[in-house]
Amino acid sequence: MPEAKISPSMLSCDFANLGVEAKRMTKNGADWLHLDVMDGHFVPNITLGAPIIAALRPHTEAYFDCHMMVSNPLQWIDDVAKAGGQMYTFHIEATEDPLAVIRAIHAAGMQAGVAVKPKTPVEAVMGQIAEEVDMILIMTVEPGFGGQRFMAECMPKVEALRRAYPGLDIEVDGGLSMETIDASADAGANVIVAGTGIFKAEKPSEVISTFREKVNT
Ligand code: DX5
Ligand code: ZN
Image (cartoon, rainbow, N blue to C red; front, side, top):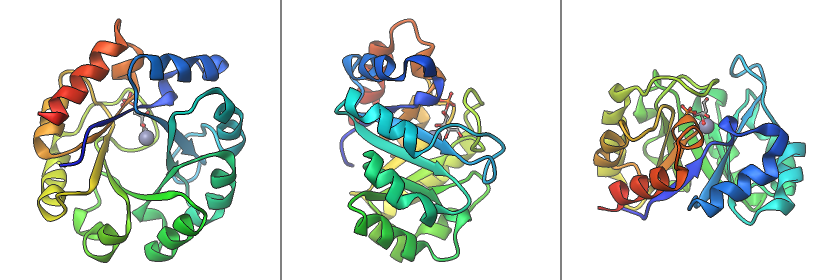
């Protein structure tokens, strides 16, 4: 299994101090920063887009893990690449031609991820898609909001992916905490996103290092 990467979701940060919050997370041991882009159409919420990603870029060297909860994933590829996004994870439910999206992401110089909502079967991304992407994100809540309950029923999807693709980065997102990390790590996830679980913790560094240990052992 690839090494752990811990990716705090900036959705739970103080947005008025985005740059400071990003630095705080890397100081606490974060490997990546998870940036949740929502368009108010694919999900019933609006968050941030390429201009905010570009504004944050000079404040941190952290790897930008962009989770694109948007109805038209092709539309934002160039903007996010120019803004400094490094992973562009689109939803399989949002496109009829995922291979074209993956190839456009790679052509723009980013890594490509594909995300799977809780009710979407994992078979939707197995085969050619899994072979072309750099990461698969298994959602463990319905996308749209932070602070929801972790859906352990999504773990068989992580297990099936890990069995089929031992070297693939597999990300989990939604409801990750000290209580739910074991189920995720045991199933084979190695990229851990957490908003509430990290930002609301008294000692984010302890949460991040515990997540890392659980994945790597
Ligand atoms: C939800 C987002 C998540 C969210 C996770 O749609 O994709 O990244 O911020 O938040 P927590 O960790 O609070 O469930
Ligand atoms: Zn997310």
